[in-house]
Amino acid sequence: MKYVIIGGDAAGMSAAMQIVRNSDNHEIVTFEKGSIYSYGQCGLPYAIGGEVGSTDDLIARTPETFREKYGIDARTRHEVTRVDCEQKVVHGTNLDTDEPFQESYDRLLVATGASPVCPPWEGVELPGVYQLKTIPDAERIMEYMGKDINNVTIIGGGYIGLEMAESFVHLNKNVRIIERGSQLAKIFDEDMAAHIHEEAEKQHIQLNLGENVEGFEGTDKVEKVVTDKGSYDTDLVLVAVGVAPNTSFLRGTGLYLTIKDAIQVNAYMETNIKDIYAAGDCATQFHRIKKKDDYIPLGTHANKQGGIAGLNMAGRTKAFKGVVGSSIIKFCDLNLGRTGISESEAQQMDIPCHSVTIKATDRAGYYPGSEKMTLKLTYHKENMQVLGVQIVGGEGVDKRIDVLATALFHEMTTEDLLDLDLSYAPPFNGVWDPLQRAARKAK
Image 1 (spheres, rainbow, N blue to C red):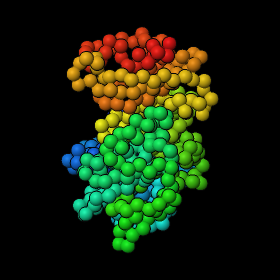
Image 2 (cartoon, rainbow, N blue to C red):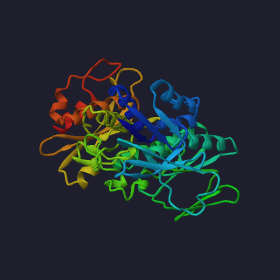
Image 3 (cartoon, rainbow, N blue to C red):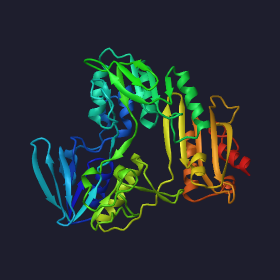
């Protein structure tokens, strides 16, 4: 059986390793447009900020490791540009030689990930305007930072925008975030985002909310950001306004593309065309709370979906159980966690819901070093099923998010939360965990 995988990062190589481990007679060919395989994209802001010593530390396995240790034909700088689904052949270009190539397959996995979106603003090609997705992206930013850089402007207040704001603050830069919406971190409700705004102010990060970027100005490099409300001096710009699936090369194949042009897959990572699978940031994920497919491009999902795709490609049937929307972000002195759906999302979906908000600490209030958190629990107002939680605070946010994610997976109610046997000792928790305090308030 010959397997071809397009994409050499989380989903693609998770699949390749499952094929290696679960099939005896196989040939695996992987194509990666870049030159680096299997690296931690989520660690890039911390490499730029200096918390991670080198971008090399983010690489889990090299192409040579896949070739020599696992017998995978791992090719770099090979871009697939077309898939012939009838002949079962992929076509592309060797970017080093500019020569075309083609490769036949018995089973194909599309794991091409996603790329940052960049609107066609005037001046976007100026030196000093960057996006962040790959190790080369990070290294270009780090090299440019070696120049006389004092003022940094971030366009976008999502995951990357907030994490990079923290990194630039850590590097003692003057940071401005421009966000076209009315709040940072739109995955949070407005009342919870207010705490994020307070932290930005505390860190002397300038917020320009409700502002639309129109372009950039400069001669040999970027010098100003121009919006519909003014212009601002800057030495470096990071554009972080979201990502889009890398699926444009699949148009005309008959593969069904759905949300944001992500590839529609079933629980077995199968597409609508036989012997073609998809996984990771280029594919959909089933949301267990929304009860429908969604597009939430995160590394956790990519690794899981890739592994499941590999098992099914190798003939070992396994289903992807879906996601509940868990995420956590470190933003300076705050940890921002959420899972499930927010109150605003529930309202948009016409789900009858209530929410309760409490202030709590991560351990017994009298124990030294306890840190505060604000917790918002959203639940169905008729059957009391838990729908989601948002937590902003210091230590202990991650623990509560993971407990609630487990509860969401099993469709628990607020009453069920009260019945949980959670660990307690003053250095770790109060007698009643904050989640249970919120559930009691809901009751």
